[in-house]
Length: 355
Image (cartoon, rainbow, N blue to C red; front, side, top):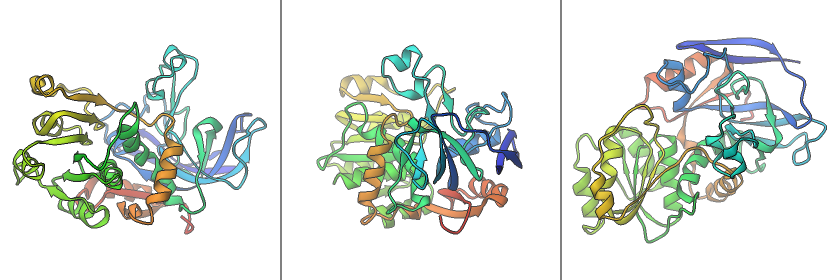
């Protein structure tokens, strides 16, 4: 069987090639991909700004946000069957290293396969994908393929909020930095919990999306408004009790402790590795802040799928998708995601009209 797949050969070197679909191992499934989203990480790898994409090891097929149909299963597969609608985790841990044996987040596995970033783990930007059963999850028929492809970014936000004994409640005053896909999902999750939500985002289109689709309580343009002043006004001078930092920018990371209420919980999701960011750590000490980093979404796909399926009647998060492109026009899709951030949140590659 042949598959038309995209391959990242290096910075700004994206090619479509027809390849032979490999024979399934006993624990693997073959998926006919229906939709695959372009993540900010894919963009950074394409531009050569990130080393996460391992084209130094050889060309790889990107796409860690995907959804499709199971068309074949290995001899030992027990939880999935042909015809199931599925999506899958990005971090495929080895389950053998010391990190895995201790039950630590599989994103910290020392011997992992990262789907959509390595030649050994092809992603969803192709007609077919071979997935490991243990990292793939059934998506209900009440969710579209596009919604299924949004599970991965939503799960990153969901885990950052509820993972490792985290929580958000109706009594929280939340501030979310960043109105990209993950920031919008973080806002969705906090709003669904009944919390007051303030989004800090410089792009007007994304601020409007947060207001119109999610119904956040307030948006702030950090380039033209005083973030500290507005947050204090909106929280009766107390500051935010829960903060989710999704930008990884110097401004966002350092600002978290400035606007935090005493005993506030701060979650850092935005990628900032490779840079040292000034932050007034004394405020974390004298406010008794809980600062926690968050990567991936270990064991949270099932919860995320259930959450997304339940809230879709109230929040149409599919509107976060601002562009659709066929696989044959994948270069145009990447150009859209890169060059038009003022009007692009999630660009989706679809394989057919059923997505």
